[in-house]
Image (cartoon, rainbow, N blue to C red; front, side, top):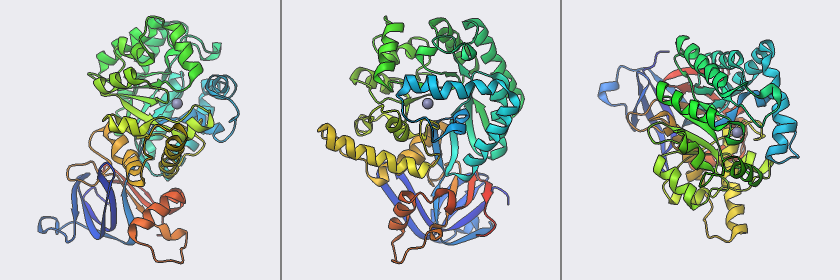
Length: 431
Ligand SMILES: [Zn+2]
């Protein structure tokens, strides 16, 4: 199947935040991997394209998992009794050390990439570990999966166990350059490097400065963590006493949006000043509700961010997040927003289904450019979903069917076809 075709079915997307658009028995046109829009009849100019009849199934935009850690999938669903800093020490770091072993990395990343392929994400922004060779193995696995992804070799040179502490800022910077050059040399079609200071506590000022230079030199995006947990925020204030607030540290070193793209995970405890800077710098926020629950981090004020016009997407944050399902992330985001609204008394209205669906599709997708909806000109990422895998006695509207499929978490079982940039990357034979 080439990258020009038409899908026919029940098309659901959110071109505008909070507005779910449903077109029943409609046609969505993909031409050379680019969406040409949704139509009730096939327009004359596309009459020559193959029509794939998806019957009564749902056709959705591919989702973007805006934040997750590939090495942590190996312990996903375990080790959930600690807060962030203790969890890193007792659960995350011991596993990440194992990626010094390339044979282990190849096995673990193979399992991870296979899971990503079966889920609803067609795009992902991923942390690896400090190990250059293993991080390149992860890139190979992601390239093969068909997803479009950014993968970062993690930079760490302080406040970490010896096995995960790079020798010096200079050697960490050299390793980062080597990782970037090698990944670019491999000529991947859909897998790109991203600069990845783990978070401020594990990166010295000297390393941050080097990473800022590398960002400029290679013009690459940046991913990291921000204002996740009170203990972490106190530690940052101690380590960078000159900073006005946590995010100010990244900004000082040229790692906070502005000329380049940056995504920061969490922003649970971001205050007014930090939120203003996020807006000024055009930084994306990756909201990770499952992780924030599991590590008792809190509930990010996403309603406030949306009202302020900040860029927000959703992340599973494997393995602090305990589900690789993006459908689950959509419902988690809604549910925690309801708790926040009820418990905080701040009057921040809960997210609606359509708003959370937008965050998972076009919201996070915008980090990659134009994708995440079926508007003309978007890169064509799509899921064909058979929600009948879970029978229902009632006759439901298409809108109800979509909401039900997401709340019941039918992504892995229900996806029968998955496309990224117009390429078919998953097809279930029994469809
Ligand atoms: Zn994370």
